Image 1 (tube, rainbow, N blue to C red):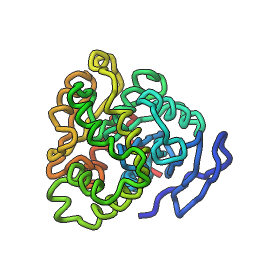
Image 2: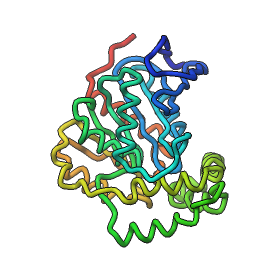
Image 3: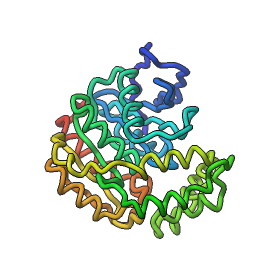
Image 4: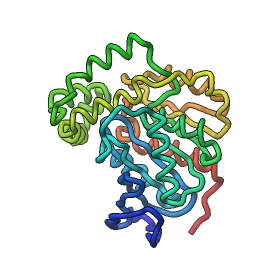
Amino acid sequence: MTLSLRAPGPRRGVGRTQVTGAMISAEAAGMAYDEAGQGPAVVFSHGSMMDRTMFEPQLEALSDHYRVVAFDHRARGARWEGPYNLYDLADDCVRLLDSLQIERCVIAGMSMGGWMALRVVLRHRDRINGLALIASSGLSYSEADQSSWEQHYRPLLGVPQVGREFALDEARLCFSASTRANRPEMVRHWVERWASHRGDAVYHEVCSWLMQDDIREHLDTIDVPAVAIHGLEDEAIGIEDARTTVAAIGSAYLVPIPGAGHTVNLESPDQVNAALRAFLVEVYGEPVAG
């Protein structure tokens, strides 16, 4: 598939630009990002341990009618040191929007990226046209769960690299059993990436969402169109959490994806892309042929 390339041109705050085929890879506001297409903006925010490349299937599919952007959070860049929280990440996201001169967008966040996206919507409603939660929710963790998971990730402090054993444990949590069996090359690709991550960076990244505040009482104030796309085999964030979130956000609806785990957009890209495309038509109207 050949993607449409928006003429890069000079942009305020953008540096270190590289164009590969139809994809722009650059840095703005201290964050690396990939961009393709032109039209209404859709911004993708990745999950913990992941990076912006997890959205390559979505950028490729949706850049025919939309300006699509995926960016790296702090843990994948030079500003990995903590502590920081989801509101800090939300502020980073808005700075990126400013640098790329994106006045309004649909924001799509996977897992941690979804928790961050909710806070962008709550704090910057005027910048958001729609919200897509991918394998995410609007719920927080109990103190017992916070303590348990913090102890699980604490050994990463001071470790130069996460290592393969820890990365394999993450893969069992993030990918469904069927994906691990049928797409071992994809799983291996991500295990290798995760294994090379700096331990401290992952620990601080995890704590940013693990210790998040409870925003459930604010979910019913979200009035932008919203969709939750969730794998039925997600063991990291169960689909019941997504159902609860959708019920709390009056403008939201749920798209369950059979056979997919936590990394639903990678495991079932065609189904997720179809759900996103239908949602974008709801938000922006039918795209103009061209």
